[in-house]
Structures are given as C-alpha cells and as structure tokens.
Amino acid sequence: VLRRMKKENYFKARERLDALLDRPHDAVYSPLARLRYADAYFLQEDEDSYIDAGQHYNKFLRHFPRHPQGAYAQYQIGMCYYERLLSPERDPRSTHLAIESFEKVEKLYPDSAHAGPSMERIAACRRNLAEREFIIGKFYYHQLKYEAALDRFTRQQEKYRAGDQNQPGAK
Image (cartoon, rainbow, N blue to C red; front, side, top):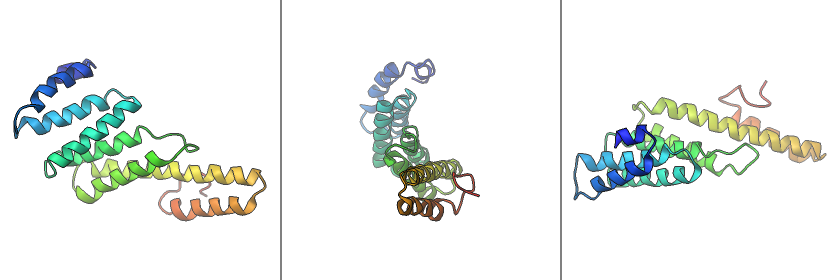
C-alpha cells in the first residue's frame, strides 16, 4: 500500500486498504488502515480529495478516540481545511474551520509533535483573516465610507494584531 502511495497511485492504494478495513475489528491494522486511507485522499491534493480525507480522519477519531495517532488525525483535519484556504477576499469559512481544528490539537494533544505546527498554522490563518479585514476596510475607504472603513481597520487591529506584527496595517 505504501509503495502504491509513493508512486502516487492513490486509487489502487485505497482499494488495497479497503480489504484491511473489512477485517472484523483488527485492533492493530484497522486504525492504521483508516489513517492511510485518509492519507491516500489527502495526498491527491485537490479540493474534493481534501473533503474526503477530512471525513475519513474524522471517522478515524470517532472509531479510535484514544489512539496514539489521534493528534496526527486531528492535525490532518486542520490541514484539509488549511489546504482549501482561499484568498483573503473570498469566503473565510475554511479559515475558521482550520483554526478550530488546529486549536483542538493544542487543547487535546498539547504535548504532541503536532501542537507546534498547529500553532504556526493558526497564526497563518489569523494573518489571512487580518488581511481580509484590511482589504475590506480599504474597499470601504475608497468608496468614501469612512465609518465602515474605520470599523474594519479597528476590528483588524483589535482582533488580529495582538499576537502578530507581520499583518497588513501593523506598524
């Protein structure tokens, strides 16, 4: 299976993993097969595959909530949203969901190897949201809607500037 994944033959890898998933309650291989199944979707690197991968990582966590790879699965859920981030001008839903998922890593698995990268991803998501507020504020400013622009600039400063000086509009 891993050989097929390295060769980027994700469909064939998932076919092989299906056979392992059908085994009745195999305590060793079933959790790992579920993770690799989700990974096979994630590695395809397209929007639909990220959605499918996220569903399978969630399924893994539902079936194996205390598994040692739980932190990895939760981190990968965040990555499924993170990889679908759109430019700051677009709908920020994936950004908010990514933050939520990465915060779960920090909360549930604070000592895991994924806690640090989760904090970095949260910071990147927050920069994206800050940039969104700045862009909207600039739009209102150019439309001569100064009160709306001020509201957006103030929100950006209050909500996002506190922990990060590398944001648009930061001094």
